[in-house]
Image: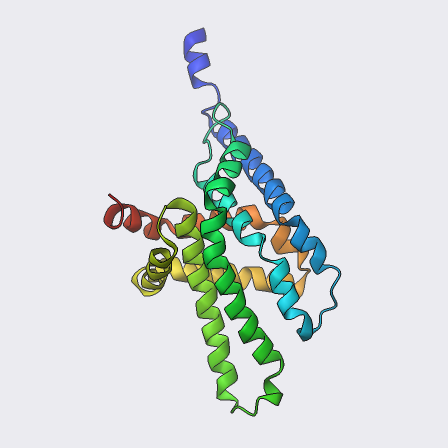
Length: 227
């Protein structure tokens, strides 16, 4: 009887829920710690469009932090006897920091250009429909970035191959793209209606939802694009 109990320890519903909460809290804390230099620097700037390039620079550490968090959440233990979220996060940060930056940096640059243009749109002399076009392009870039972040966190592709796959899955896996879009809308709404701190404090659950919604992307990539 004692052998059975020892074998079953940590595998019940309550244990799995406790393991998930522990993992989310640990990953959230490590993510905020990794991104804290840039996030703290953001507090020093006024919300002025002229500071957009500096804000983008401050957000550079966030890319590797998000990638490491996705890696840790994907490889999380399912019960109390298999909990190593900090180890998984640090491993993800070590192997994914450079690949993530190769995709995160150009994404930030492009989004900064779009945001700067939109905030100074009246000075450009462009017709109004250009603003809608730029907004749509920015939204598409964010969705591409969500797919690229998941792919680079879980697979060891070259940056250009990850970029191509992320673009391919935008339309190939429409449900996954819609799931990512809903999370982006939720993030933007919580930041706009409440405070910018809400998405930061809920980053781990949001990333777990992104992983869940990206299931078809992950499955197809593993089946068709890995040996």
